[in-house]
Amino acid sequence: MGFDNLDDMDDDHMRDLYDVLGVLPENLKWFGPNGKRINPYAEKHDDAEEQAEDKEPFMNVPLEVLFERNKPDDIDAEEAAVVTTLIRHILKYDPSERPSAEELLKEKWLEDA
Image (cartoon, rainbow, N blue to C red; front, side):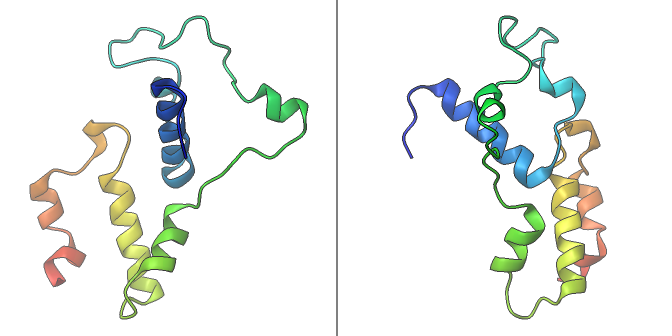
């Protein structure tokens, strides 16, 4: 997959994050870390072409499905749920909501590893 410019690549990365990790928090949708609007000239929705043609937007596979497809054989469904919950907790969009290394080391799944 080639990219015409870095903006296209950034957009694709954001779509991948959305598809795998879920909805972006409202404060990250239209504003950068400095609080300024990322692109004040952009429309709020850039999928107008898909909407006009009644196309489904491209979607990636959710984290849980990716993990299920790629997990080791010795991980059962219950453990897979624990692992994907932990991964989602680690990959929170807002860094202040992510666990510290100390908190992670106290996670039962990591203690048992």
